Image (cartoon, rainbow, N blue to C red; front, side, top):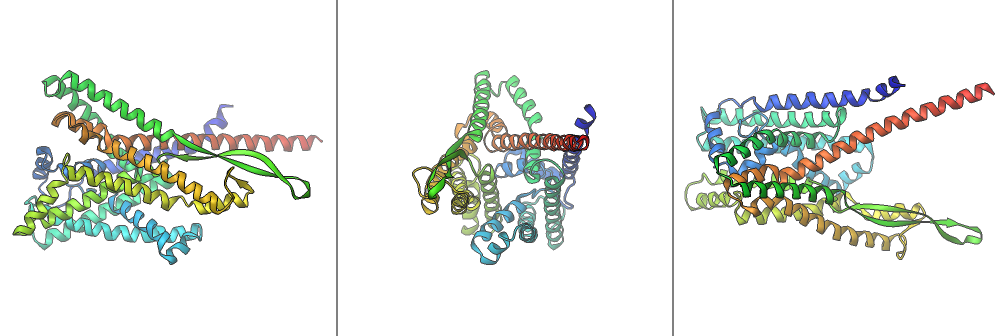
Length: 441
């Protein structure tokens, strides 16, 4: 009896090993430097705190930015390209037709996404190379470094895109999310050791230490509770009877999550802010009042400044509504319910049902957007000092939200895979027993 069970889990084990192997490759790539960059100066910049505006981006890349690595751009260009293409598939008629063509159309859209990711990677690679060269962090300057740095960073971004797609196809979970999760998780051991060391040295009081632990545990519980919470809408199925009369038949529920957009708004808002800061820092090198204005504007997006808090919160709320409205089309859902002879009690099938679903979705999205914004800016709002603030930046806020949501999705996918294999095994046994019974007859 153990042999069929082991065979049923063989594919799951191979997928898990592929995921581990891909993440090892990713971690090796983080330590491959871009030629011509003075890595000691870059590391000193991040250690001194002057690179705090890029701390979140550096965390998502698993430390690749502070290492001046080929993979410094991470998956940010691919994420930006995916969001832009998803927007245009709902607004641009030719792409909208492709989206409605099923798997063949989706392959075309994926191909366009890769092309757009290449464009974004070249633009961001050029901006970062120019900014690094302007700050004197390179061993040589001029057009040679601009070309070398842009090509290397763009190549690393394309490799990350390819690796994420391979994990999605051959591993477990969403590849891009798993790469971001790995970039966050790799900092946790060093963060714990630094937190204990700061407490022993007296830089963090014991009261602050336990208060920080309480905040982290409370945020963890809040994230798990909200991510599992659902609003269930009762769906009734009409039961046909004679003489054209219909009565109430079966009843089911339509589950709607409070946070339908997941971690996408937080990731995209972080990518947008990082892109803005890179642009402002690049323009800050212009001489005169214009350069000083953009330099001050770039400094305004540092952790803890009101401009960063307001912009980050606003972007999260806007992208929550945008992504939810883009991914969940209630009119199609209402039409499908109508075709299935199903309805929501108190609302006519079709337009009224769609309007009711829109109202419920908007209210849930507002609550979910406020929740995501609150969790993401919590470390900045607490402001428990430099040492504890850095620990909260690692263990709370955006990093904790992404880590918990990706981990929950990973566990659910593993469980689904196990259940599907068990179901297939049961169906095979049922078919074999049926054939055996027929042969006895």
